[in-house]
Image (tube, rainbow, N blue to C red; front, side, top):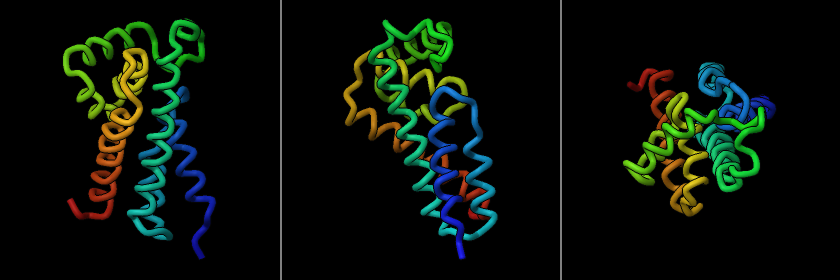
Length: 145
């Protein structure tokens, strides 16, 4: 019988990985896929939902950056945020398709909030990027790629 805690743990880890704490959601997804207790698409959906929701937290922090930017817990440093803002100014909302990338991805989601990207377009692009990453990882893990 599949363990429901696997889904909750995967969701939580993916959420945290997209926010203020360092975490490896990819390793958790691979472990869950290899265990074979749950359908792969369900695991990808759960990880994607957690990771996108975490990105929404970053977006919301970006909206209120003036108050929180210099706090220790803020998920993005000044240099990373400046770099991401530059990318965002150059490529616009399409830069959110890189929100899956290590280092720059979290900064891009914060920059999107700072620059007042509307939530619907933010959700669409971030969901495409983050789900795409998990789909590729699942396909590689399962030997489909």
